[in-house]
Length: 271
Image (cartoon, rainbow, N blue to C red):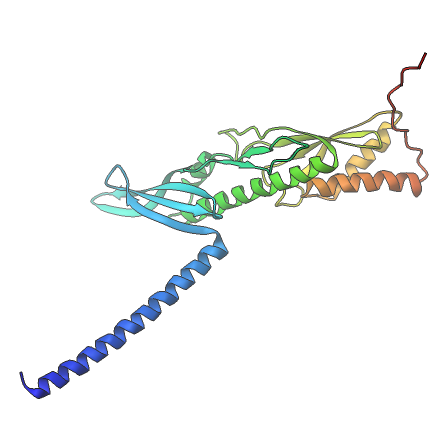
């Protein structure tokens, strides 16, 4: 080994070390970028593995930091060649239930995120790659809607007398069924609110389905209240009920409508 070869080896080694350092910096940058994208989108790829059959691939994703989903992709066979991957099935790996914080006044509120069967059915009519994007987007939106609804209903029953019904999931419908909430205000009005699967993320996703007054409310006034509020296209049950209260005060103070008195419970006479 000559002295010239040694010097050449040192130079090449130094160049390799510089490239390694550069690759490390690039790797750190891409890792940082990946973390930022996961934070922005709420989608984290946990693993990619082979399925039980040769043409299947299993994706495991974490959505919004809490819920894990398994998506099965199948590589369709066309003649002797394999075509694009298509969504075959999807399911929650973690619990599909969302809970409210416990309180002394109320029991823990629990709502379930609808299963993903309906989304998979829609995917079958979409183009390759579009089906996977659609499934991830709609699943994330579904989780977000139910989580936000639990927060809304927890606040609603802390302010108003409310009976909260369950979401009746159905495999035949898209996004689950509507939810009924029976709610009352002190002016002698009880309403049945209907919450669509998009509540509270979409305008008009909560509306008054039925309205009943006690103590002498005129039915035409109640119908006017219902129509006026439903035209406002609320997304928040709390906002709707607050507006209902404000409307009764407006009727009394501006329109001169005599509101029924709140009924009181008769007291037993003392001997």
